[in-house]
Length: 344
Image (cartoon, rainbow, N blue to C red; front, side):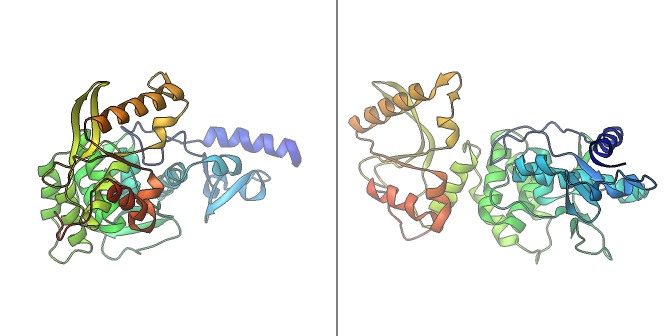
């Protein structure tokens, strides 16, 4: 069987063997909304079938030993969607082993994506999961972490609970990743501050990344409304910028203005305010409003704040992300917000 006939037979059999499960995840990942994950095929599913194996068809791309995805879908997929495809492959491979006692429990960034938490920065190339003593720490598809943790069920996926996942993101992915996830979880009521504290206290005294996780829990704030705001606040803390008031409401001639960051006159004079400019604000439509309307409304709001004595700083994701937020810090300095002598 060759050419179009072989590809047609392959697609037919693959449709029959499809086990994809789409999990409902609250909220938006840091890179935007996740769409359907690329369809995954395991070579082990084709034992005994001739002429239709995915490794013999250029339409399928190998992403791990024995794991293939549609090449076109893989090219178009985001980093989050690609990782979720690997999660699907890992879960199906684990189920094929026939050992129900070793059901896959996702952890870290893999758990975060299934739970709907933002993963800021690089997404791991392997699926992060819980392991046991004696397990290989790494395989071609898995990165196992030896730890005890509460487990929850999301659709058909088992993951560490939200608080544990947030703590692990800080430990394994760094301060920005941890704070962004914690802010999101607190803001959307996915866990409470006490849950984060309990997950932190449950770690061994010498656990890897414990210090970073403690700082992340201290910085986490339910008032933050996006990963960009979380990133910006971490950069402020790292640079010893005075702690801002979040989501400050100010009445102006243009109506109520709510600013991402506000510093009272005791910290910097006059009262500076600041905004993180996310791309979503300037997409084709924002809550039913055209881009032009959104931009004009932003300009009116900013002018009204300036007239009341509230100079405004603005920055983008790139300004806050690169070079430890140097361009963001320059924008803040321009309105009178400069580093102090101590962190919060």
